[in-house]
Structure formats: structure tokens, C-alpha cells
Length: 497
Image 1 (spheres, rainbow, N blue to C red):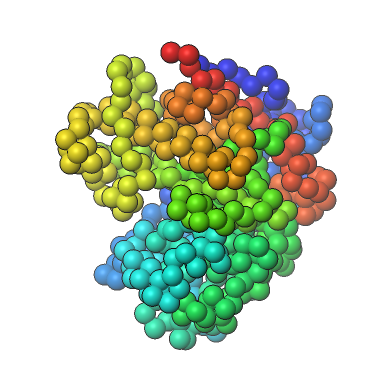
Image 2 (image 1 turned 45 degrees about the vertical axis):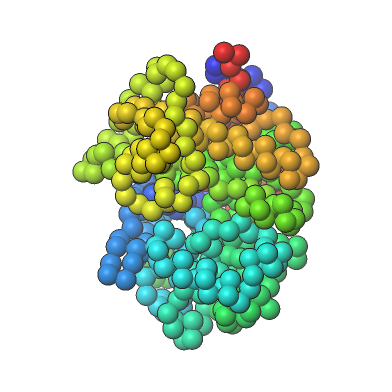
């Protein structure tokens, strides 16, 4: 069952009230699409609220070339500049700063300020070569003890190790949002929350582990200076300003999208778990220190950086990729809007199905590459002699149940490994709109689920800038208080049936 949360107010986006004055802009780059969103701080009846305006949305479609799968990086940058130009036209002279966030791990290599090649996509198969190369130099248990990261074949350390000769000539490696910031300002720097996903950052000191880099065969010289979220990088260059229409500040935000999303979890008590549910479902806890035990390594939990020195102790689950890639297989010629509409129809049909839904391992590596996911899901069951789901609606119901099981199990495991009790699960991001998934998560976990905000990443991005500009009081608690006043999560109660 679902009920509106009684202790929250309605999102101010588009609501009445003054929105004149200082504004900030977020460039939020996801693995399937990018957005430009403008935010303003408005004083409501109970305090500061965030009002948001969606300015632009654009597709992020990878490109396969003979040497592998790449991001269409120049097009992303062009679209981001066009989006910022539209933002400037919507609020002439009001935008004070912009912040850029994106997915983690992927990067560009620079020499003399020029990009060496097209950045690879983390789903490219070359990553497997890097795993073997690194583990030949640094055993897996030692690697975890030093960087605290779950084993994912696409971690930056493995990708860098798979480079074919480029590390010998590269002068700098910049993660995706850092590369955007470099093109906007000319400043080479790495924001710590995203740097923590590389496998080259010490989770205790939050500094580069230069000895580990060299041991893994990665020249330490390519690692840029580290900065904190909330630091001013500089003003937009003349070249970019000519496209946008004006120059303003670039502020370093929690540039890993999950870090910004977790910052915007509207938690009002400390015993919460979070799921940042998009292409990936990032399931975990916010802790004061990393958990670097062998048990955590064996459970494949990661320790990544958050705001104010916090640790995001979490586990990756496949997430809404299973839905979107299934729809892409069924309707290859459809637009994103058409697929989204079809997904809603099929999920509504899936919710009416009776009887136990077939459950598969959502973390099985076979579901990671692009391609015909429905066929692979059916194959998972037939290989085991189990009944496979039939038809589109039942396959989506099977995906929903499998994700709910994986999410609930990850929350339970995180609670045990960190010795932290959990009483509520906050689901933020696009997956928070999936009512069937949220309800089944509540049922499977036996815990209350609070869903929303959908645009948590952009909200975290915008509010970090607002704090840097002095528009709201500093501190993570105040940031979350603004989110809680600006959104109305949907509450899902475990069903007794």
C-alpha cells in the first residue's frame, strides 16, 4: 500500500512564490541521458526551499567503433553548453554558478591539454584485461585493504591498466565531470567523491594512494590535485561563454552523481538506508568511517566518499538498466518517450499478475553488457530447469521481484557488516517512480520505504552550490532539511498479505 508522507511538504518546483534573484544551474549527466536544471532558494513558511526548473534534457547514446564502446563525449559537451545557454535565456543575468555531476569511473586522458582519444564506456569489454593486469601486481585482498572498493571490472584502476601505451604519453587523467570542468574553466582538478570511485584513493585519508598507483602500473603523475565539493573552480572561459551568452562561476559539487543523490536524501533520522535507483541501484548506508573487513570484501561492498568526510558504504545492483535495456530490445526503433510510456503500461499489467513471480539473480554478470536482456533472463531460468517468465509483462514482473530481492538483501547485508540498525529505506532517483518496485521492496524487506525525490542528484548538486554561495546555511543536515521541505516522498508500508 502507498500513502503520502504526512511530515513533508509539496515540492516547490513550479509552485507559487517568488523565484527572482540568484539562481544556480546543474549539469547532471546520467548514463542514458543528461539534464540541465536551474534552481533557486525561496523562503517558505517553514524555512528555505529549493525551487527547480527543468531547462534541457538530451540523450546520452554510446557509439561503438572498431576499437570498442565509447561515450559520444563531444556531443554531450555541446548539449550541455546549449542547455546552459537556454538556462541563461530563461533567467538573464541571474545564474551565479554551475556545477557538473556524472556517473563514476570513466575518464579522459590529456596531453598538453588535448584529449587523447574518445573516452571509453565502462561497459566496454577491454576492462577485463585491466583486472588481470592489476591483480598480477596487487592481489585482490591487498587491493581492497588499500582502496576499500567492491570488485567491479570497470573500476578506473582496471580501465587505466587496460590502456594500450597511452599512459606513457598522457600527462593527466580527468574523470568525466572533472573533464567537463576543465573544458569550462581550464582548471585540472579531481573532486574527492568521484575520485573515491577510481580505486586509487585511500578511503581513510581521502588522498591519492600514490604507492598503490605505481604498484598497479599507473604513473602517479597523471592524478590531478584533489578538491572538496563546494570549492569555486573559476569562471567559465571566453570560448564557452560565447556559446552560453555570459560567464559565471563553476563550483565543484559532489561530482559523482550518487554522492550528490545521497546528500539529497531527505532523511530525518540516522537509521536509514538509501537506494539511489537509476541505471544502477546503489544500495547502502552513510557511515562515519569505511568498513574494510574481509567480510565486507567478500560481500563485495564498497567504501566511497560523501559530503563532510562521510563514507558511502554500498553495493551495486543492476538497477533500472534491466528495464530500459529490455524495452530497447523489444522496441529498437522507439523513442525514449515511447519506451517510457510502454514501460508504464507493462508495469501496470505486471502489477495485476497473480501467483509467485520467477526470481533471478539480478547481479549475474550476464546482464551487464548491452543486448537482448529478455532472452538472457529466460536463459537464466532454462539453464536451471526452472519455469521462465512468459511475455513482456511477466518478464518485467520478474525483473521487479528480482530487483526487490537484491535491494532488500543488500540492505540487510549492509546493516550486518556495519553493525548499524536500519528502520527505513529511502529510494531516490528515477527508480523511485516505479510504484510496483517500491511496494515490493517494502514487502521483501519488511521496512518502510520512502520514495523520492526523483531528481535527487540535481538537487544535491544545486544545494551544494547554494551553500557555497551562502544562500543557505552550511552543513549536510541543513542541506537535507531543505530537501525535506521541498519534496513530498511517497510512503510504502510492508503489506500484510
